[in-house]
Image (spheres, rainbow, N blue to C red):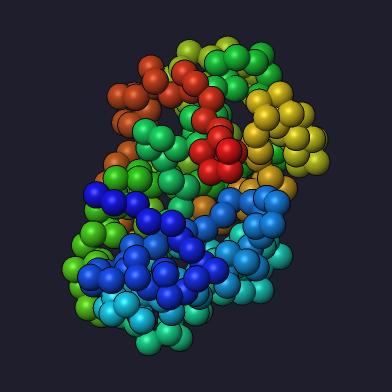
Length: 258
């Protein structure tokens, strides 16, 4: 297996990286703006990628998106994702779009770091009441959907969501139970939760949580109205993997920027 740089500044070189491929599985996106990188640039980069893939003869694009996106969203993450989907649909390439909910798995950031904080601090702040839904989907289930979608030919848009929907506070409580945390889950205003996240970001030298992520959670955007498409239960997965969850902190900046 070989790895190639994105080279968005050189579409011809990017097209050369795609030569010989028939299907492109696109997971490119950013979680938050950083340095010169922002959501508008991520949209333009994706458009460049689509054009380069088509130039190289790629016949099908499987794109990982997110649920409840909208071009009119006040949240830049969800708005940018909608603009990318629009570009894909207008490109003329055969596509399958998978709109995922809250992705979890062996190397995820959010659930792992929730567990990390629960293991180490006596108080865990919950933005608002915590009574907003999440519907976690296992990363391997999402990958299985993507592989199956790559084998198809019809244009399609499918939500990728797991079988369980929980209020966020209940998900955190479940994680706390599995990792044997005694942390007190404390409801706080969203602004206080964001301030706490910024303080912890300084402690761990990372971006723990953003304002848009808190708003997206509280608006219940990480769920689907469609029947579940993925089988792995978050409850069962936590029971089987709790001993490793949160054992070490997963740094977004370390993975992608340092």
